[in-house]
Image 1 (cartoon, rainbow, N blue to C red):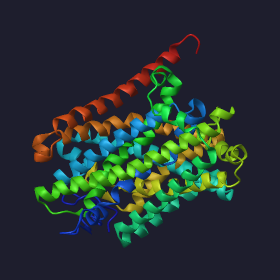
Image 2 (tube, rainbow, N blue to C red):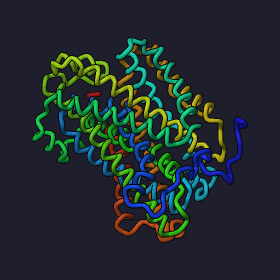
Image 3 (cartoon, helix red, strand yellow):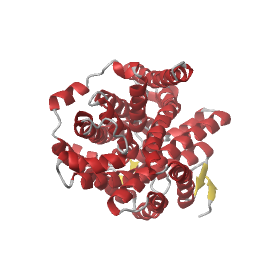
Length: 444
């Protein structure tokens, strides 16, 4: 295969495109099983190491207050990922290719650059998270761990060569490991479930306090990730549904059910991370805990459970490894879609990894290991700023009857989708304004 080739007539990920058959004449559960998989690949982006940094910081500093942000973010995620399924099935194009068809070249170049920045920010979180897990479990220096994370491209290439179902099976196994680990952590931490339930009720202080809003936007950026919108609209097309209106409606239904179930599981994981941080640190006088490494060191002593820290690190390793696989696919989809170019996967992965490894190594060398968590949180806030540039085209396309035909968003869905898109943009503008005021303040 050449290092670079034209993809004008090719779908994204052509090696697995429509490779999974959908059984005909079978019952609901058989068809749901056939469509199950893409949602879980998407869900790993909603529980990657970037989420850990923001959830731990939010729980330790503000108790259960930001659980409402996690819940809202998850509802937004379910909505947006369902739009991805609708776009992909109706047009048989992913979001990046749809942008290329609908916008001029200059707009597409800008959107591609922004998408790449988002993927680098995502990869940055995975590199750091994986390196921290290796350090905690095996005492591998953080500098070395960051370099070792570049080797995961071999695993992805091997699995993809044997079929997309193998990749999905590995990701589901890793996601299940994360869920099991945090179910144990919640049991260990003995949270006050009455207070936990109250945390899901929105608090006006989230908008009023700049520091809380910064972490809240980090949670939003970590939960609703722009690269997942490009990813989902491509990998749903690994399913070989028939090209009839009836079968397309069926594909939208089952694809949406798959992603909703997977993202509900991600909601449990994210909420569990914040609940454990709040119950363990916030209410014990350790509100300053924001470093993943500090959380690891304090979990077992504070909870009185020897394996608590080990379980925490094991879940972090599973999180880093699962999310790094999907970032690879996203990078390939974005480059093929916007630029109409296909780069050999190992080269694409190497470029993406170097873009994340270099700033990680610079921060570690200049500021020490303690800088990694701040870099993680910043990467998630950066993702939040990138989000609108993927959300607005997605909502625009799925609301266009000429493009979508009978699968266009109904009026209620148009109103909700545009409301979500404007809310995300508005929150980011608010944070920028608050940051400017803080800089200009005489007290600063």
